[in-house]
Image 1 (cartoon, rainbow, N blue to C red):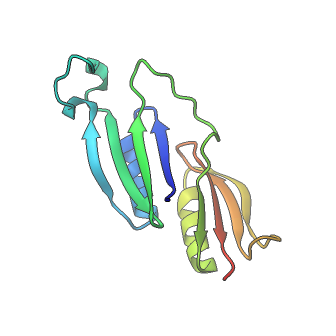
Image 2: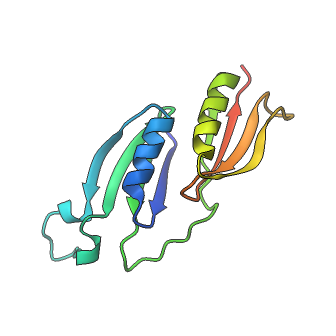
Length: 138
């Protein structure tokens, strides 16, 4: 079993993927636009969607996070319906990631000691995704 997340965006998936790759010291892989799809009578692509990202992934802490732009005929509901939680081994790594994610975003809970973690915080990044970042106890 493995945990994977799928995050949807409204036309800024490429920027989000590059941002996450930078913060988590990873890279964007398997990037495919809607225009890259093979011709198929069962799947048509609107001209407005041809350059949008249909699929990309970024490995974060051993988890494959999949990303896509929603096609123009499907509404996007940005919110906290997906809240990735990342556990780190050190307070320094927790702070590095938290500080990267808060650039252009909003801090919901500053990094602090809690009953369940020596270092925990919650931040909404500039793309509307709410992240929980914590140092796990060994």
